[in-house]
Amino acid sequence: MSTVAIDLAGVSKSFGGKLIVNELSLSVARGECFGLLGPNGAGKSTTARMLLGMISPDAGKITVLNEPVPARARLARVRIGVVPQFDNLELGFTVKENLLVFGRYFGMSARKIEAVAPSLLEFARLESKADVRVAELSGGMKRRLTLARALINDPHLLVMDEPTTGLDPHARHLIWERLRVLLARGKTILLTTHFMEEAERLCDRLCVLEGGRKIAEGKPDALIDEHIGCDVIEIYGGNPHELSELIRPHARNVEVSGETLFCYAAHPEQVRAQLRGRAGLRILQRPPNLEDVFLQLTGREMEK
Amino acid sequence: MGESYAAVMPANAYNWIAVWRRNCLAWRKVAPASVLGSLADPLTNLFGLGLGLGVIVGSVEGTSYIAFLAAGVVATSAMTSATFETLYATFARMDMSRTWEAILSTQLTLGDIVLGELVWAASKSVLAGTAIGTVAATLGYASWPSIFYAMPAVALTGLVFASLAMVVISLAPSYEYFVFYQTLVLTPMMFLCGAVFPMNQLPSSFQHFAGLLPLAHSVDLIRPVMLERGAGDAALHVAALCMYAVFPFFVSTALLRRRLLR
Image (cartoon, rainbow over all chains, first blue to last red; front, side, top):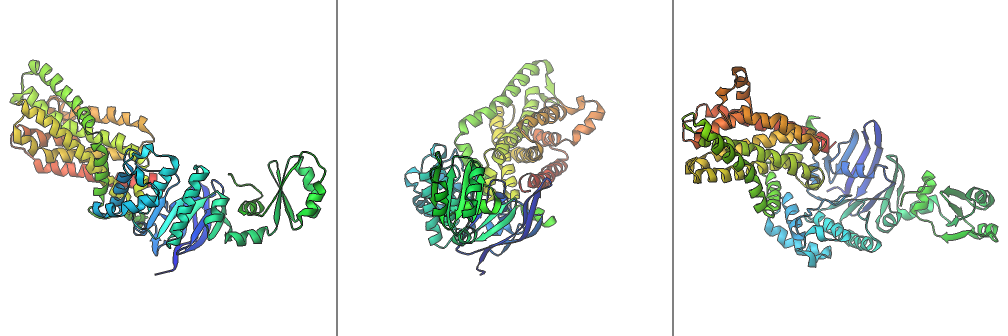
């Protein structure tokens, strides 16, 4: 069995004359958590849907779990669990009925589904909700049920399209913790996100997309080191353009984004010295993160 | 291109059952309301027209008008229950409630889903046909076992109209467009196809056209059975209905592929 879970080679897709995915190539190893990172409209969801055979590429070659996609996507999907961007649970069914109905789509018998359901509900922390109608669950619970449902066929690969978008921080942390458990069990995860923190916490490797093109790829730490490699000073207030002229000689790079000035400096104390005594400024010094990488690469902030 | 169409066709002969069972589970939660709702309209037609007009009309083709009409109402209700199930419930599952989207992430293909939905809609036709047939037989407008002999034809009718409605939902941008299909196709068919009055009352040019319509084949299959008469050309009617069921199945699956799996 190949050690590669997902392989995309020169994949392109356009809708209505607009290029959404542009000659994208990437490879995800088994057991790895790989992130597709980018702003809305970067082509993340389209890429995720192409992997599942739900969209046919115009050009390029896709292989998932050794099956050519979309031609044999059905056979790949037998070993894939999907967490879609928008919940598509059966709202009128109970939690348990959702698992039953979904398990049947994989050809599982009711007995087999009943055998695995308790452990899935425990995993999703929904043991006490088994007989509750889905319509009555909170957003976080629905998301966890979607995750439990995606695991019903004991998949090798999980494809998750923005798994925590729209969740509150507590619910989001719970999902992250659950995903780390899955990774520890050896599952492969491909996730799309526009949360830098999510990508940094979970992903072994990631690829940054913009306008359907890959603009960077690597381990989160390595990307941060390679593209930033020094502390970041965020400056709010004042005239960002005037301030940027003032500190530019002491900084490696200065970016203006909205009302915020991002200053990348190997010697931040020199920058701070320049700003000393100026009223109305708020200054925050912090280690660099993926958000800075994205800003550096595109000159733009990613939506939060 | 051919390969990608092959990939959306039913993967095997039994995958569709999971879709059918999903719909059955959802239906069981609202079964009483659903049965009452599907009975009200045909029974109103049967008694309103049958008893009211029956007095004026007298006998038709050697039987009472209401007995003549009962078979037409069974065929028509098979048509409408399969059509409405597909137009409204199936369309919702395909569109707003994202049920199909969830199923498409499993090992089922689009063709498996379409097939499951069609058989489910046909099951609802059998349910409606059985309910109306039971009422008609209880009141003596049809003989007892014969209504059950008519059920295969009712199921086939349901399959045909579910399949045709599937083409409609694969093309319609939203609910608003379904009314055209109802008023311009279904309602005329009910009057043209011998459900409420014999087709030989139509001008002869209409008769030839109407004889080709699917509901005409259904009525010509169901009425002789319910009136315990020998059916002429049964094989021809069955063959015609099979074509009306199978051809739209492939057309709608191809159209739905374009709509959902670009």
